[in-house]
Amino acid sequence: MYLSQVTKTIERLTLVEPEYQSISCLPTGQVGTIVAIYEGESPQYLVEFADLQGREYAMAVLENSEVLAIHYELSTAS
Image (cartoon, rainbow, N blue to C red):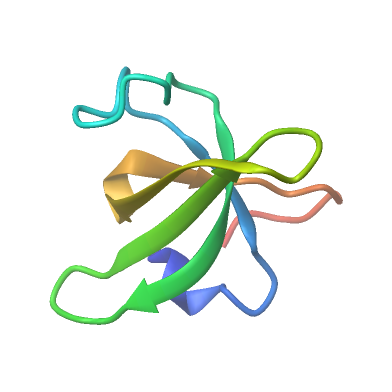
């Protein structure tokens, strides 16, 4: 399932690629927020990464295969 099919309930995601190639400060597991969705054959997501004070330190356009949705409440897989 593409993230775009569930974006009404998912705003946060985590990076699953070992290292995002163009931004070395984004190791696996970094949590970001979707700020824009680019629809197309293969949807892409503009994701903002921020520190605990809310200061942005990176933005990246990511493919569906590079991210994993984070769920804060128990839910069933679809």
